[in-house]
Length: 562
Image (tube, rainbow, N blue to C red):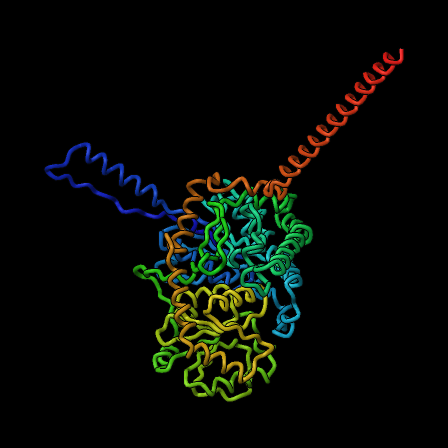
C-alpha cells in the first residue's frame, strides 16, 4: 500500500532560448526565477488520516485529497472508506482503509428520532464522547492501524494531515513518526466546543452557540448563562472523562507511555482547518493558525485532463430536467435509518408529497421499506451526489437534517431549506438558518401531512427565503481565497515552516493566565494590602498624635497646678 509514496515525479525541463537582445544578466535572472518556481512547486509526500466513522467527514477529506493530488503532491490516505479517486489523479495516491470501522456504530443501529429527542445538550455531549471512545477502541485494533504504526516509523512524510475531531487515540503516531513532520489538523464538524484546546483562547460562549443547543446566537442573560454552562460541562467531560480513557487506548496502541494527550495537541498541531465560515456561524477572533475553510467540499474546481467528473445517473438527470415546476430534494442524512421511523410518519410524508405540483427526489437508505405506493411525482434513490444535484437549475428547495456539510452545500448553491434536526450541531444549525430567514424548521415529532405541506409550500411560494439564501450564498462565497485553495496553501506552509510560526502563545497558557485571573488577583491583593498598610499607618499616626497630645496636655496641666 505504501509503494506509491516514494514515486519520483518528473518535472519538465525548462529551456531558455536567447535572442539577439539577451544578455548574461537576464539569463541568470530567468534561471533564478525558474529555479525558484521549481523549488516552490516541489511535490510533497503527505499522510492523510481520517478515522472517524462518518460519511460526511470522509467526503470532506476526499475533496481535500483531490485538491492536493491536482497540485501533483503524493498522498497516502488512511480513511474509514475507500478513497475513490479515478483517472489521472489516482497516479499519486495510495490508500488504506480502517476495515470495519463504519460498522462501529452498530450499537446505535436501532437509534432513531424517538431516542434522539430524549437527549438534551448535556446528555448529547456524554453520548458523543462515549461514541468516540468506542470508535477509538475499534480503530487501534484494525490491521490498517497496525500497518500504519509500523510504516510511519520508517517512511518519512513531509506533513501529516489528520482529522482531529474526536479520535485523539492516534496522537501517539505523531511522537513516533520518522522525522517528526509538522501536523495539520482538520475539523469537518466546524468550530467544535474543544477548539480552544488546539488553538488557545476562550470558547466565546457569549457569541457562538454550543453545538447541541437550540440556540442561533446567545442573546440575553438566560441564553448566555445556559450556553456557558454547556461549554463548561463539555470541557469538564473532555478533560476528566474522555481524555484519560483515550490516553490508555493511545498508549496501548503505541506500546509505551506517552505525553498527556492534551499536551500533545497543544504542542504539535501547527495549523487547524475549521469547516466553518463567519458568513454563516457568528464570527469569533481566531489566531493565524486557525483557518476557516467552510465549504471546501462544495467548491467547484476545474477538472484536469483525464480527471473523472462525478455526476448523477441518467435517470436522475431526466427526472430533474423534466421538472418544469421545480424540484425539492429530500435527504435527511446517513444517520437516519428509515426503518426506525414510525409507519404513520412515513405515510404522512408520502401523502403530503403526492399533493405537490413539484417533483420530489427522495434519498432513502437501502434498508428502508415503504409499504405505500410512491406517488408519480416522487423518485426515490439510495444515494445521490448531493452537491451536483443541488446545482441543477430546477432544484428549488432542500429538505435536510441540518448537518453542516449539507447546510453548506445548500448555502453555496443558494437553495432555501426545510430543516428537521435530530442531534449534534443540527439543532443550532437549524436555528441559525431560521434566524437568517433562509429556512424553516420542521421538527420530526410534529411531522404530519399538513405540517409537511405547509413547510414545502411556504418555501416554494414565499420568495423571501430564496432571496435571503441567494444573498447568504454570495456572502459565503466572497472570500480573499477559496476554501480549498486556502487549505492547500496551509498544508504547504506547514511543510515549509515546520516550527509552527503561525501559532499563538495563548495555547500554552492556562485558563487562569488567558483570562488574567492571576493578574487581577495580584492587583486586588496588592491594593488590599496597600489599603491595610495605609490604614495601619493612619491609625498608628492617630494613636501617636493622641499619645503626644495627651502627654503635652498632661504636662501643661501639671505646670498650671504647680
